[in-house]
Image 1 (cartoon, helix red, strand yellow):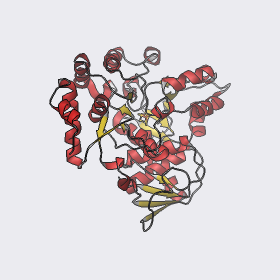
Image 2 (cartoon, protein in one colour):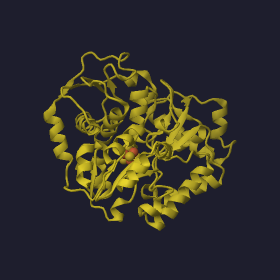
Image 3 (cartoon, helix red, strand yellow):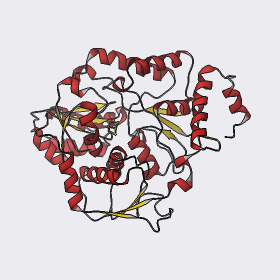
Image 4 (cartoon, protein in one colour):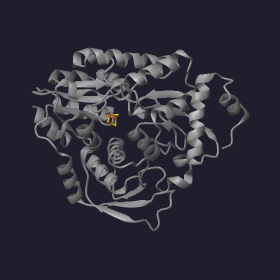
Length: 394
Ligand code: F3S
C-alpha cells in the first residue's frame, strides 16, 4: 500500500503515539482489503457510543486516548448514546448507567467530536455530497449515505471510524471504488407500499434473501427519504446490505450496469409474511418510533395522530437533539407531551437499557428495530404501522 512521506512520519510516531496507533490500524485494514492508498474523508460517524455496548473497557479506552491528546481532523458525529443526555432522569434511565454514559460523552467532546448522537447525521448537520468519501459506522446511516446520497463509505467499525476521524483518511477499498458499487441482484417490487413499516418489511425480507449483495430495485414509486431510510435500515439489519439502487429514485441507479442480474420478486404475500414473522408479542408496554432516528416529518405525523388524545401507555419517538429542537419550535413536542408521549433525543430503543426499565413488549414500525429488539433488549415485538401502534396505546 502506497503511503506518502507524511503518512510514513505519522506511522513512525513523529506526530505522537496516539495518532500512530490509529494510523497503524488503518494501514492494517488497508492491507487486509487490498487498498492501494489512503484517501481523505469529508466526515466521520462513530459507532460504539452507548455504555450498554462498550462498557467499562470502552469507556476507559476513550478517556485514555482523549487525555493523551487524540483530536479529530474532520467533522465527526456520534451514533446514538444509551440515554437521552438531558432528560434521562425524567425518562427513568438508571443513575449509575447515566454517570458512565456522561463520562463517554465527555471523552468524545474532548476529542473535538460533535456530541450529537444520532444514526441520521444527514438530517442533523452532517450531510455529505454525491461521491464524497466518508467513513461512517452505523449500518443504516451507511446505507443511506451510499444509496440515497451517493456518497462513498464502507461500513466502519467503531475503532476504524475513530481512527479515520483522528487521521482524516481511510483506506481506499470496497465501496469507495466505482467497480464495487454495481448491483448484483435485481429486486422487482410487485406490491404497493404505503406506510414506512411496509418499507421496513420489504427491507427485512430482501436483506434476508440477498445477504450482502447490492440490490437494484424496480417498482418502487415515489418513496420519500423516510421510507428509503426504513428500507435501507432493515436490509442492513436482516442482511448486510450497505448499498442499494432504486430505479428512477437513487442517484447512481442510471449509471450502474444492471444487465443479466438474477431477479427476486416481492409481492403482497412476502410483505404479509414478514409482518407475521416479525410479530413476536401482543399488546405493547411501550411503543417506540424513530428507528432510524425520526425526521421532522415523522414527528409531525405522530403529533397529528396524538393531537387531543390521551395515551394510556408510553409512546416515545427517538430522534437527534437538532430535530427535537425543531419539533419544540413547531409545537409538535408540546402536542406529544400533552398526550403523554415523549420525544426522546440522543438514544434509541435498541442501545438504551429498556429491558432494565421494566418493558417486556415493545411496539415498533421499524424492520430494523423489530430485528434487534428480541436479542439486544429481550423484548417481544409488535411490528405494525403507525396508525395501529398509536391505536394500541390509547
Ligand atoms: Fe438508529 Fe438505533 Fe435504529 S441506532 S437505526 S434507531 S437501532
